[in-house]
Length: 331
Image 1: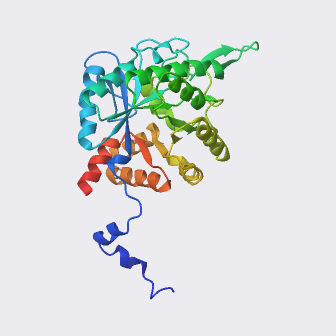
Image 2: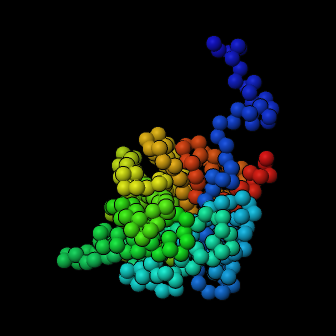
Image 3: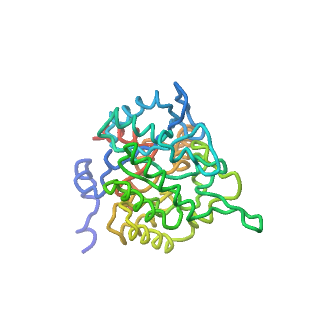
C-alpha cells in the first residue's frame, strides 16, 4: 500500500506520538565521563583547546566527581598527568602514581562511582609513545611490542590494586588484552573487566587530547600501532582478537567518522560496544557554538543519539555532564 492510505506523518503529529515510537533512547546511564587528574594543589585549569574541560589536582577533584554524580553519571575514565616522565613510563605503574591516587580518592568519596583507569604509557614517557622505544641498527626508533606488554601489565595490576573497577588499555600493542588479562588474573583480579580500545585509529581527531594529556609523540607518529582510518576489515580482525584474548567490552575510537565501524562491531560481536566521542569532536562543536553558528545542546544530543543508533551501548564523552542535564530537562 502507498499514499494516500499510508501516511507516515500520522506518527509524527504530536510530541507524545513521537515519543511513543522513538527507536533510540539516550540516557545518562549511557555516558562515561573522562577526567584529567594532575599533581599540585588548588588546580582547576581549563584546557584551552577543550573549553569546559579541566585539569584537576586531587584536592579539587572531589567537586567534579560530585558534579558528575549529581548529573546522574555512573562512570568516570581517569587520565593522569604525571610530575615526571622517563623513557619507560615508570609513573604509570607506580603504586602511588597519579591515576592510582585519584582512583583511591574517588572510591573514598563515591564508592558507587565506577572508576575506569586508562592503561597506557604515552602520558608517562618522555618520548610520548605508548611503549618502550628501541633503536634499530639502522638508527630508526620503534616501539618494542613485547617489552611494552610487561610494563602495561604492571600498570593494569597497580590500577586494580588501587581500586579501579575496570581497566581500559589504550596502547594498541599486539597481544595487550591477553597479557593484561593474564596479569590481572595472576594477581587475584579475575573479576576486573577489560574495556579494550580494540579499534583505535591513527586519527587527526586527537589533537586537543594530546594537549590535555601532554602526550604528543616527540618524534614520528603512532601509525605503526594505531589503525589506518581507511580500514574496516582490519577493525573486525582487531576486535575478534580482543574477544578471543578476554576483552569484556570493545571500543571504537574516534566515533563521529567511524559510525560504520561501530555498526560493524555491533553486528559481529556480542560484547558491549563503546564509542569514544573524542576531543576534537567535542572541540569542533564548542568552537562553532561559541561563534553562534549552531545550537550546542541540540547538536550534542543529536550526535550522541547518532552514535547510540549506530550501535554504541556506551559513549565516552566530555559532554557527559551537560548531556545528562539536558536530557533530564527534556524529560
